[in-house]
Length: 139
Image 1 (cartoon, rainbow, N blue to C red):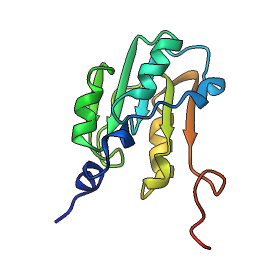
Image 2 (cartoon, rainbow, N blue to C red):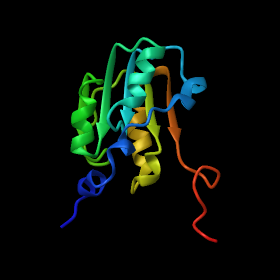
Image 3 (cartoon, one colour):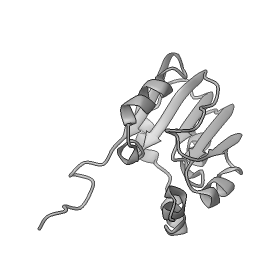
């Protein structure tokens, strides 16, 4: 039986290696503690560390291979489904979920769980594709 992880492992390596500098204007002042959902191989955090001080970062990734590569960038990488895993302890200044929520069965439950991990005054940045960012399904 094909698992969710197997489906992601069939994707090309570059699928997990995109940095996301378009979030620069959305970043809060404090980025000391960061949690990134769908961290891939760590390209966005690598970019963020070059822009801002990050003291501690946790990545969550479905693909075991991408998770393995992300360990060179993150302090801790958790591999698995964010909807069913125990989340790391809180105190995050920034939570990133870039093109992740639309893949979840119940994104609102995950958002509520993530909100509880934010420091007071902290920020989360979520991005979901829209018709402006994806090709049309109909011709």
